[in-house]
Length: 317
Image 1: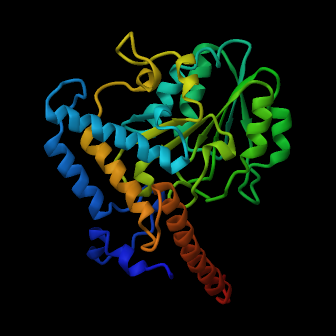
Image 2: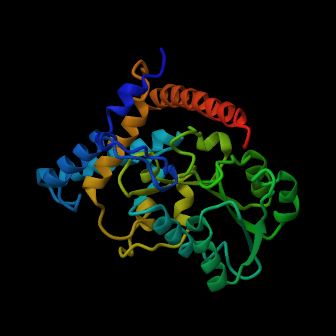
C-alpha cells in the first residue's frame, strides 16, 4: 500500500498554521496523540510508583510501558532502558558513573561528527578522571567518518568510544559494525547516539553490537525525554551510581530524581505513532515499526530524488 502522507499530516495539528516546517534538526512536530497522552497521564498519575493506591499503580504501569516502548524501538530488553529528562542529562550521568573506564592509563574516543551531547560529558569525565582523549576526524568532502582511522584510534588502553549513528547536521550515516568489533576486541564499550537517525532508521542494538544506545524522543515527535538503552542490562551495575538511593540497582542507578509520568506516557504514544505511519502495518510493535519506517523512508527517498533532480535542472546550481 502506498504511503498515505495526507493521513500522516492530519495527525499533526501544528501543520494547520500554514507554515512549511523544515527544521528537523530541532525536533519533529508533536502528533496530536502524544499531546493527549501526556495530558491524560498527568491528570491520572502521581510522581511515585511505590504506594499502593491506584494513582501510583498507574504511574508504575506508565513507567513499565515507556521502558518497553523504547526497548521495542531498538530491539532491546526493557530492563536495560534508563529514562530521564534529556539525552544530554543521561549521557552526563553515564559519564559521571564511568570513572572505572575513563581513569588514568585509559583512553576514550569521541568524534567530530557527534552532537555536543555525546562529546562534552566525555571530555569533562576525562578531564576529571584522567583518561586520554582521541578524536575521530571527519572527511570534509564526504562528511563521513573514514573507517581506516579506527585501527589507529582503538588500541589496547581504549575503554570507551562515543559515536553517532548519523550526523544531525549533515545526515551522513556511520558504519558502526567495524567500530564495535575493534572496540570489543580490546575490551572497550561503545556508546552510540542514535537520536538524529531514530525517526528515519530502525536499528537493532544486537545487530550493530553497541553496548549503549542513546535516543531523544523529541527527535521523532515525542516529549522532552531521553533514554539510554543497554544491550546487556547486567553491565549497568558495573558503573557507579548517580542515584540518591544508596541501595539502587539496575537502571535505577542511573536515574536521578522523580520521573515525569505524563512525559513518559507521551513517549509511549510517540513510538506508537511511528509504528502507525503505515496504516497497513500489523503484528508486534517492533514489526509495525519496521514496516512503517520502511514505508516512510521510501516516501522520503522519493522526495529527495525529486529535490536533487529539480536542483540539477537549474542552470545556476
